[in-house]
Length: 92
Image (cartoon, rainbow, N blue to C red; front, side):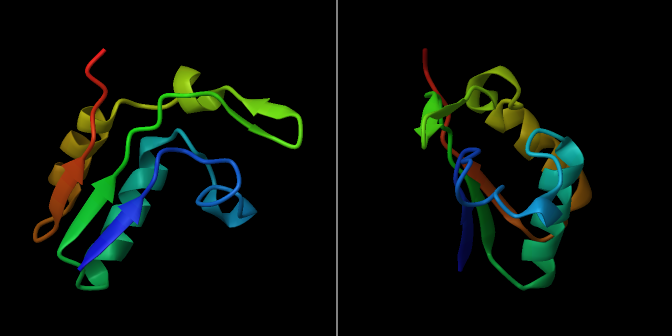
């Protein structure tokens, strides 16, 4: 059983004000630890290297402020014990 968290997306994962920062490693840690407590097998983080637009507003944090996926997963490996970690990574 996997929890897929797509790249930062202004209208889904991070639209709830309770989700806090969309670029802070603490937010990713909280999510991964929640997934692990829920007995999921792995946590999947999808890369999203494109500018997103919603209702005329461009969300440039998708590229400019987001930590790189392998860096995020390295940090998550240090704070989880039984959770598999997977991600897509841009090759450019």
